[in-house]
Image 1 (cartoon, rainbow, N blue to C red):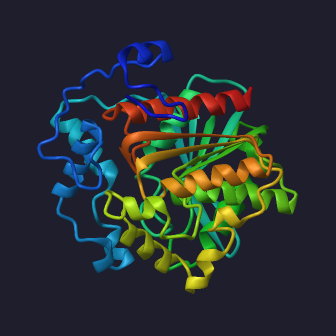
Image 2 (spheres, helix red, strand yellow):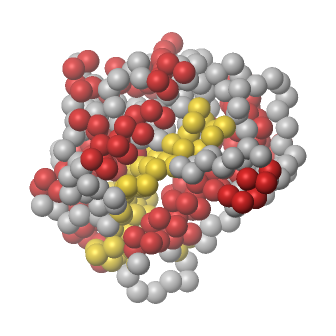
Length: 355
């Protein structure tokens, strides 16, 4: 049963009264026991994690960033599971186009996803991929961008911000803001409606979405109407509850998070910068925020802390925590039922904001 911000009782009669649904079997069955760090992991999620582990990649701590970028991703694992179980890939009715845009001191690539069979100017979602500011790219997170575009009816601009350690803090943050500012100034050129802009991202990208909204506020750049932040990097306390409880979780564990931070920051003190440590930032005046967290994730606690800080700053915020799933579950809707629920929730929140 999916756990959201509303918890349903265990007894069947109370489950029915609360409107909860019994889970349907997908036929996706794990091959081994549940991991010690995730005794309530959902079977479909466990199969994805088992597949990822089966690739036998070297842990990040033993690799350079260049080497780490060659490791398999959670996306690779999902595609392999879909192949194993003969699950057809979802079809998203969008067109894509690439473009180089200027940022401070350089250029970055953006990929523009436009829903097919549409006319007129459409809402725009500026999207930032995950990967700890160090690994991954817009290809790894292609499914998330496609599903957000196809299901919201919005154009998605996915930003290939520059990665660390080749480009240290605050390069990714500056690129993220510059790309958003470019969209505010050039929305019409991509059939975008400048009055219906949203920011979205996952993990490191979830951080960038909120940090970009803060910088837009501070610099007087047009504000988004919504912010979607999926399991964001949001704090600097690496000994909070979920960092301890899920220190060994996969695909994201505590050592990997420390490795990402060391690669992106110039000094350990920079981890306290409010652009990274969002819970210490001035959050007043931001657009409504939606936070999605996975239970089995070292970043779960700071997602809750960010929600609390937003509420204290009088920012409208909704947060859902999905039980039995791990970091990177968003975008796995073809395999993991809770991922589909999270995707539908995110789409619903964005569509409401665009209305």
